[in-house]
Image (cartoon, rainbow, N blue to C red):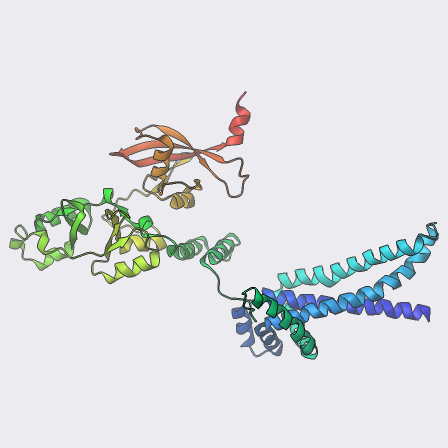
Length: 454
């Protein structure tokens, strides 16, 4: 009878451990599934996919049921395993000449360790890893069992789940029956980058999606052409002057001002020339053709800025800083380039903003820090600057001359924080007081330089 009882007890332990594994697998597989995936599979008409959908739509209730099942099976396993394993270990310990008084205690401790380890590995860790690695097939295999158990144990689950929800509401948190399927732009961006790294998305598509997700978080100041780069025409200039300016610069839109950009009366477009007879172009003043242009704050986000620009006939807006002065100008082309990348036509400068230069990179000083990081890998620390030229000016502390160099510190997201990467920036060309072109070259880590010093 003792042998039969021991055998039945061991069989019961195996069955209970398998039950724990089912509950754990159901719990982790249901939480790992997306609502869209569940609904798409359920449309196939398979009965098991319908079970998964039903369980996923009552997720909070099912998770409570799984937790209850895990608790019951784990407690029952411990209740059976510890005395059975202790009786099996007693003869082994006696053969090892363990003192008789110590045998029961040592056998009980070993029995607890063995039972807990087996339950943890086979009842929890193995099914958990399986559910995370293959959530759909695991959910299809366990959801029917989980639904049946939850139905039988409904009173107990409602009691425990209701108590937990009551406690949450006391803390001002409303319980949810389903996991949220919506994702923030940051989470979506992380998914896109991960998909590109693993080959699920090609790099060009990943870059396009990532820029689209970041578009709304940027502000007008980051999109605009700065006022120092804007070509203007005076209100008393003629249409002939507009034609000449368009021919010289390749631009099609020009602010019409009375003095400077802070006194802009509107925008003219070169296409307006064709509405005038040729003989009137040398006498018609631009003041008469200027179309009022919307003014937007420099802190306006990308989505709102796009709406403002698209609503204007010339698809242009002036960006105003906090002091009321004109900081720059934004066109629909600037906004499109932020999403799809650099867009050039036959009138644009053919020189790219970033190009390889020996072991480094030649970049324009107006390139934003995030654009430099994307193109070259140079990741600057945060500071009071927007462009790579601004960073170099801040580091130097004076207006540089062509050929002047300065060391910059960048951070490797995959490297140690206390050992930043050293880069050298060399000014190549100046445009007045602005850095027009510079060369960035990685020279190594700071720790390497310190080791080289005697």
